[in-house]
Length: 213
Image (cartoon, helix red, strand yellow):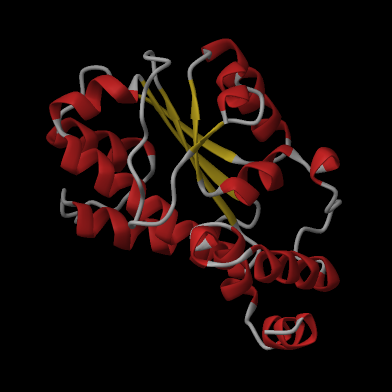
């Protein structure tokens, strides 16, 4: 396909489709198509501050890599969380080191303000998360500290949580709401699960392990 044809195809894509192409579906597209998608995103000014990646805000830089990122160094994580709070984000910061699925749902309901009828299951978590963007016009960050320990005890539950957050993040982003999931791990050799079969979480923008990629 000629470059002009690729550009025409990308102009016909929705904002949501373009964002998916440069993030979760990136491995399915050739470089010319990814470049054309990035150019169309720039033309539409979807990332309003600055599209030069080395000048992006922290939130946009993370979201360009995908909605889930990983930290190992808690000091760097805490500095970045301070930036999010100062920028008006709501931050939900969970220590998952002793979590079970039951404790997780109790914490979600208590800390995130889920309704009394919250069903204590992942479908209910998905539904409640989808409703939250209507009331939060800047963004949210959901942090899971010591996530590798929790995942050792319940891998399926943990992977599904990340998939839900990732799916909701794409939906929020179309309306220019931002939802970011952060997992902090103690094992620097932690291998993140592939989300939805396509997206591999990356190390946070300011985490020392980022240099491995």
